[in-house]
Image 1 (cartoon, rainbow, N blue to C red):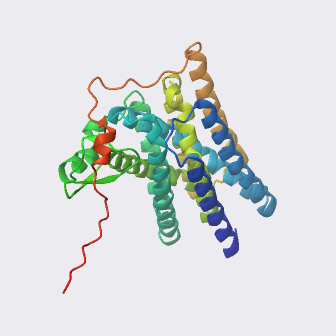
Image 2 (image 1 turned 120 degrees about the horizontal axis):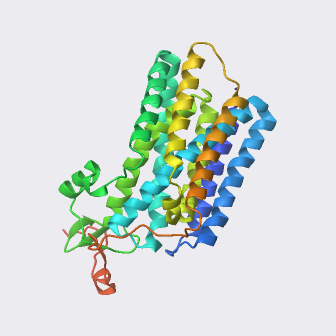
Image 3 (image 1 turned 135 degrees about the horizontal axis):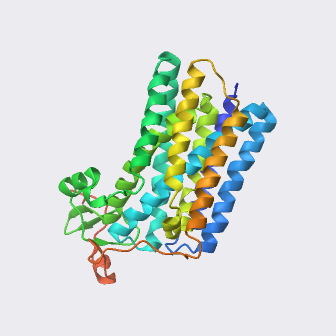
Length: 340
């Protein structure tokens, strides 16, 4: 697919504009209500679908279907990421009004890291064709592992990233609003919010290792891979606030995601051996797997309402008092002028 430079620049500009609008709309820390999350989720999905329609119109049905297949795979795999975020926020007892800022920065970092991974993956496929066998085997193994560990959840306290951060970075014992760094008694300290951000970035990198090979099984066009990833990721914050309190109802979702990963792994193997599976059929199979797993989950848990993840009895961090926050020094201090 021959994509001119101006279209790349236009897409990047549109992404930055949408991020700026989202940041401006949530510039003040507040609790994101379900209704607000639903509206923003609809906006982000409309942006992703609208861009897919543009691709379909400009480059034909095959490119459009490849984009939508990649978008759907990335969006569905991201749901598991959302549930991990809920576990992290609950463990650290992050106030709900502070969660959006962390997720905004986390998504911004995810876009950068995934762009790097996509560029690296494309370069590997271009120069070392047999790497597709490794990608396919990795997807099959990841899907199998997800099936076996479908009832297991992340334990933030045992996370290597958290233990390294706690060991090597001086940190306060309280949240100070949306600040990531504070200065107290002349010492620069990280806040728990920075630790949460680091942990979210690390988990997203782990998820990207699974999702990037999966989308390369659908299309090897770098433009479609990047845009499908970007538009799927942009709506993750709103999706979190919409679904975090419903994670207990998606009991069969991990099975569906595992089957999707295994299917795209099989598709990649068949593609290597010159047995091409039409994108329409591949997309239909992915949609069917996800629809069945979600529908079965909602049916099995019918009658259950929203339920927040249980917070720890003794949370590791607290919220700083107004007096403690007022006593903080400026993070970036001007050096005093030296008179001669």
